[in-house]
Image (cartoon, rainbow, N blue to C red; front, top):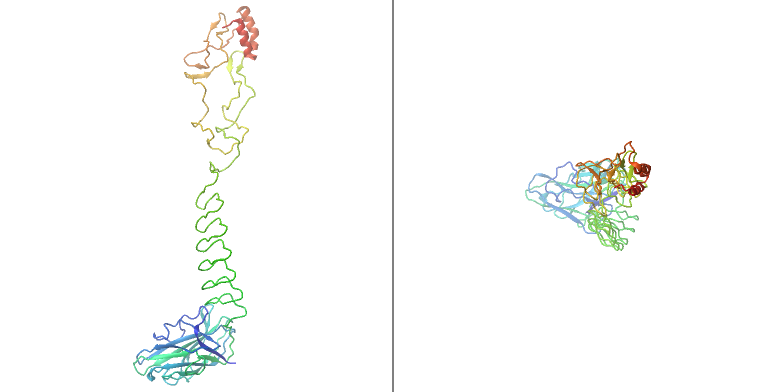
Length: 477
């Protein structure tokens, strides 16, 4: 069964079709169209409306001209080859004057360019004919004339089914008999073959070509190259524009469309929703609970922390000094008593600091401290070591020599010698020297009182208060 492909006025919908004519001829600049980029459609069905025409005004000279009229593209072939056959071409034409010699002068060959194209990558599979037809072409008249001729087409193989289209280009080779520019008309897409008023132009081959249909399918595909086609289930996007559907999707290519449920983001701006979300694409938006941080900076919170903490360690209280070690004694005696003399040692109370270092307290320090940190009471100075005392003396102090009670006399060889004032200085000063307390000699010639003092001396080393009371009874001082 032969196949007829009718020339239609609507454009083919495939991508990567020929952007220009593919002939070996050089076309005249005087096109029937503005250029050769348009790809009209060929279909196995005829038009149901009146024919359409393409026209141009010829070049006003008697030189030979190759006029490109139009090209037509079939649906995708559903086969892997096109057989060699004799093809038939029919269309209608009108020339404004007999000297126009359109589409050729008298009877003879017609120029044909027919080939198979691959839309997926925009390349040519092969050529059916790029050359002259059989010598059965004819010249048009000043009224619409049916032009019919045949050509021998070559076979084209190695096609990909569903990715191959037949392209036919209409050309006119004209040499006018005069130098007057003439109107030339090409007629197609009518309802009737071989008609002088409503021409259904076509090409045909004896081969039964199989095409993928160009009509709506029972299963409607998601996208159409020109526009979205209707389907039982409406898909999310359209190439040209968004179309309405029962369920409104989240985004539109151009703008956000309304929907019963408002989504989180809009391509251009944030849109309102019942619950205000935490972030907006452009800026922070308000929310019922203000979060601790903002994308740009710190935002207010109910409690602002005092420090930027690198490492947190727990503590119950903040100590005043950087402490190395803590020492303590249960009870400290006021004096260290030696046989020969008195030497000041620790006091009854436990000292707050150790001479070398402060030791840790039971409380855990809150922070890992490199230097003094703030506390509820901030000290006035940065302290290297602890030197403060309740009373600052008037003199340059060499060493500490304080004692609980200073005797007025030294107990040595008689007579008893007065060595101190009623007020005992707490420090030995450089301006004077103080006799060693209780220096002792071998002689025991102080009489009965001295012998009694010798018996109390051991108690002096044990309990200073007892010794003071006994010395008071003796009346010394």
